[in-house]
Image (cartoon, rainbow, N blue to C red; front, side, top):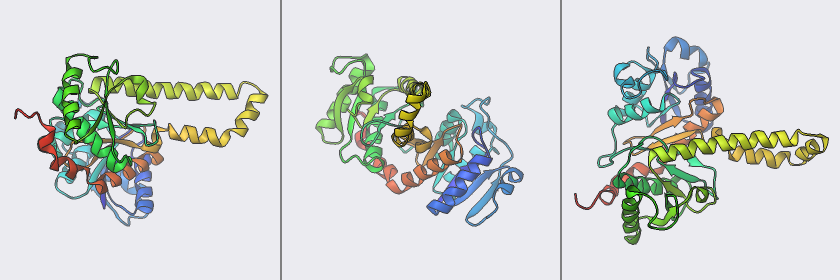
Length: 334
């Protein structure tokens, strides 16, 4: 398997990006195409075995307009990486660069799966036995009911293949569990999801409130990108606050420090379960070839995890599943 790396994307590029990529080569057995300024990337690769470096002179920054960045900077590391994926030079792209630019670039260059209205960002949050997928988390601020139906299908395929859920429970994020809750979008989406459930195509469990997201009620939580992003960022903020507050408690006095020593192993496991670096990134679900958005602040460990996620995505066959079921994912009036 060959993974194409945007070596210049992210806060810690190219050093941490290349380190994580080389670790993936050594531990996962993948081949690499590192895309970026050759004079910056090449010195970081002491052993070139299994590594190809493709020179790209430009870098997309956070100041660039994401809607036009890959078109205006055609020789950027991100744009070149996506073009290589389109040409079949590799099996997946992993980038820690601008989220908006990557989503737009993937949509314009690699293209969506035929019939998919919008690609979605689908992070897996720490909840329940397998985690819970949130789809969408920011790619589509305004959605139609059909978008949410397609998110449900795509999330269900992902949860089954990559999260280990035999019959993924799909919930619709709402302000209450009753069928009548929410606005027009939620009402329309509820009807479509209920119909898909009755036909045996997904396992729709109804509306899920914010509290239910983290109590293991659902394996896939479907929502529009605006609401999903607020939930995601709020969750990240709460986790950071809780870890900081917990640290303050255990460092408050000698007795608490002794208690922290006793619980050290369990605390480390809890912290790891909430660490975004353990997941590595977010899949752009609905794109015709695998594209993974790594965290912008990725270190080598986090970027390695993103590549590991890309490898699993390639092996899963999710894109094939979506393609084969696309007729059920459209409004029946078409």
